[in-house]
Length: 465
Figure 1 (cartoon, rainbow, N blue to C red):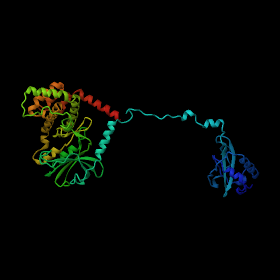
Figure 2: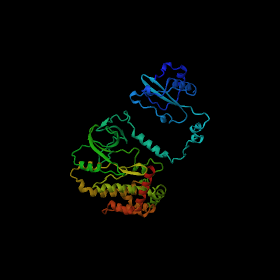
Figure 3: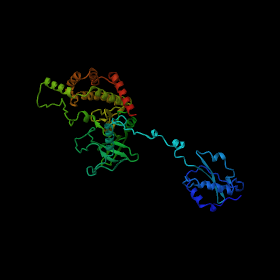
Figure 4: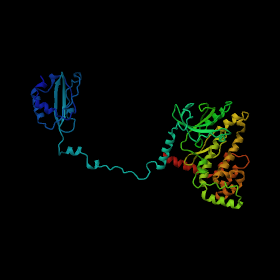
């Protein structure tokens, strides 16, 4: 039986079919002779299509090869879609038969319209106004601290201000001075050698480091490298880790460079608590020697000043715990700090202390006197570390660097006895004695304060995680 040619189809039927908007399924078929549809049947179907005024868009037929379309149309497939279904329309194009099936438009006031239209309650959303406090976000203080450290990390030097600054030093570039570079001969930081500090960026990794330069240092031998390797293995939360040591002539002389981890925004303990630039700071022990005063008057003046300007004792104990923890690691690895003073201890964050400039004294002294055996004298150096720790705690308790001088120690200890607890005074007295001492012996003196410090640290860690 012949199919009706598409060219003979009425124009109104084609235009009406062009407005169909739902296509669900088609089944191509090539066995035209076995089709159950006749020309008369197709004409009757075309008249029914003319009565469907709600059909609006043109369906896009999907072509399928005739070799895969020999099965008859399944009645279940033709009626598997939702809503009323119009009988399939089919046509032959280029020897391939296409079948289409269309949905009728939903009733404007019927039950299906109610099912498809969402309820008003499901579309009514109220945006979350947020909270006025900082419970869900970082505080302004923390945000400003992060932004300030990022700004300090990205600082670039002014070429006109530092014309002699090299572009590259070994594997580092973008050098930026972290402290004023002094040209004075009397400014000697390490046993007669001038020192300066720079921020630098590693060329390959892009990581920022701190470079400690020892000016005009001529290397005589490399025996100290074994000690440097021991320092590089130390990793502690209260130690500025040493990365590498090398010599260079990039600065125009023979310089020794120590590379450490970089902590932006840090300040020394001297600037934090003993700086004369602080408002209202006055060293009570630094009196005018030209004006003689009675001892009782001087002591009363010191006590009066101490009551109004003393550091909180929990803060001092916090410093003691951090310093003893770092010294315990250093001494257990057969090393000594040898630079435990307020100019070499830095605060990298709120009350976080770190020992800096480590290994510098070992290298400088090892080179200046090669006959000195560092391993044989390490115990002596460790005893000096404990004495330096006692003087540092005494200076913090009196808030004076002059208090640790020999002529002022007895007065300073009396001030500590009147101002702080007996435990702090006993700790200072133990560290300043001449007997053999050990960092491990300080643990019972610290007592439960160590546990409280660990608990606070874990609470702070949980807060940020």
